[in-house]
Amino acid sequence: MSRFQGKRILITGGSSGMGLAGALRIASEGGQVAITGLNEDRLAKARNLLPGNTLILRNDAADEEDIAALAAAVSEWGSLDGLWLNAGYAEVGAPESVTADGFNRIMNANVRGPMLQLAALSASLNPGASVLVTSSSSVYEGAAMTSLYAATKGATVAMVKSWAAALAARNIRANTLVPGPIETNFRHFMPEESRQQFEDFVVSQVPLRRAGTAEEAAAVALFLLSDDASYVTGSQYAVDGGLVHY
Image 1 (tube, rainbow, N blue to C red):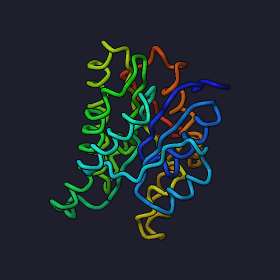
Image 2: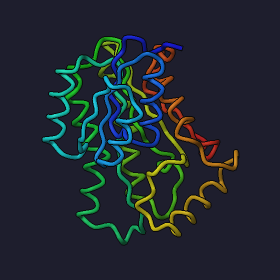
Image 3: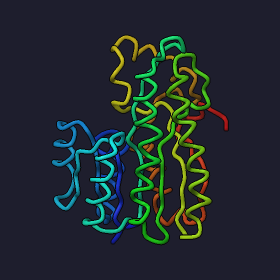
């Protein structure tokens, strides 16, 4: 397949997990890819896996100066046919444990970041481009310990609906990827025992009785980023093994 031949795709949070899986597949299908990340070790590993013409940037989605730097780098690199805003951050805890600092930290990464990134990168989007934002099945699960995280990911669903309407005049599509339990490093901030208990609990509710792979989530993301989804906008696509009914 060569769905991305001659196309440029930017993936934030592309140094590991779903983002990296997507970047590798885009490159294998003829596209040029740019990725961002924060962890230097993961960026270095991604650099070894991706083609030499890949644009790899250390960039913080929550930092206003980094967002401006990203827009400048993309302007020099070339206009975009696809933008996957995949970078994110998670904390879990009881509602009583939420602090102002914690609230700001996760809102800045998951809501403010993609909102400002789209604003900064909009001028670099080609007519017919596709915008994709990673949300989470946490929005719909009603889990006791994820109220703040779920709230941020619910906000992304709302913003993408509006983006789809606003960008339609330029023939630019905007959609949301809604992954469920996917085997990535995303929850590695949790203590190992807590993480395993959490993942076991979630997977036990999945009809397919397993977590998905990063490659499975990326496959749906790439469908939405490609021209195969040319009549799809304002939609949510779940990759959750049947966990949640929308």
